[in-house]
Image (cartoon, rainbow, N blue to C red; front, side, top):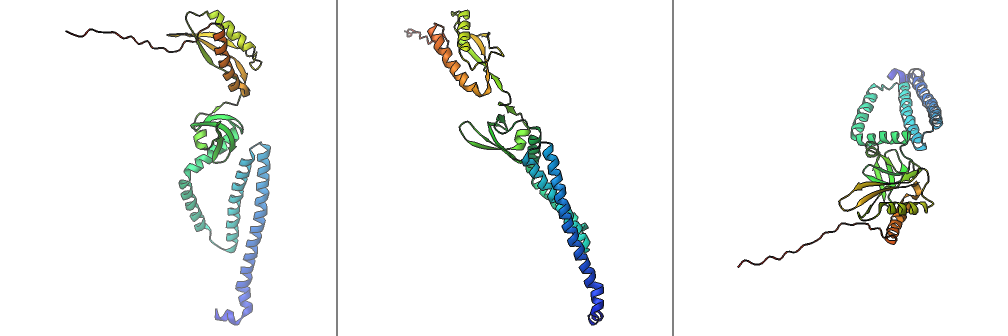
Length: 276
């Protein structure tokens, strides 16, 4: 070392220049690597966009890909500096395993979110029943889905609970069938009741002609003859038509003298003479 200090030229040739070359090479590797990584991410996003993936998924996967490529570029730059990265990779692998175990639930939510976005069992604005709750879909995120209920409560459901269970998409079809069971008394005329129901259904323009409405005897119950009333409507009209139909049935049955039986209980009181 003393000899190198006495000879600055030798010091520069043996240490400064090699280190300078290594630093310059590492900087070039880092800068070029960042440029290549951005090109790769841009191309990958373009391909995913052509595949019609959701923008939230494209953005998330693009960020993940850029992070992985950035780690590769940093390791390559450190290698250019002469840093041994084998132990560093081992540390990263161990840390990654620990993080993966700690976040296994979130990883399952992430995987479920990706599947929901790719396969699209529902979209924003659909009314669904899933994950033990029901509501209109507001946002489909990577880790959870946000719904709002008819009474305007906001519910955040982990994606794993949704994708891992049964999903009922109420809004998936343009039309829905209203299923009503209307009871009439055994003394009432079935034909008259059927005609009354047909007249009521035919007077409502919101009820579709195709598929045709169906009215049939569903069951001979203990205290009533149960008629199945099944008209078809547009999904958006379902609840309004159902409510108006029930009200109209009660009103028309009353006007036509058709009874709607309801549970009754007779109480019989017996008097028993006291023992002498």
